[in-house]
Length: 165
Image (cartoon, rainbow, N blue to C red; front, side, top):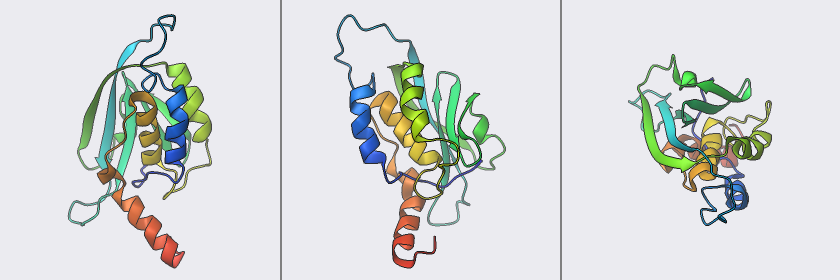
């Protein structure tokens, strides 16, 4: 499923909450903490709007090692091997390397999956890009580049003034 760019209306609250849950955000944990596997984290992004237009929309996901996590309209959070959700999209897929991080997949899934349940997809407020931004925040403490959320921002402003979107 493709989606448009988005940061989600609850992203600041999610990121604040992740500060207490995320291994990446609590790097100064005690020596008694379990050793977590070090996995490469990548932001995977594909344009879904023709490049001739002044504003771009993107489908994005996060690749943790060789597992792709994405949020779809039809299935909630989908986990697959490799960037399967980008297959069949016409534009070139870009892999943005976010480095190697200690990853507790159980903690990640426990924190993220309840927030992005099947049936909760919203084209402007809770889509693949808001999911990916949240996942990147949890895993690395960083954020997705805002250029991948520009179409969603324009849509929110249009909806605010016209209530059509």
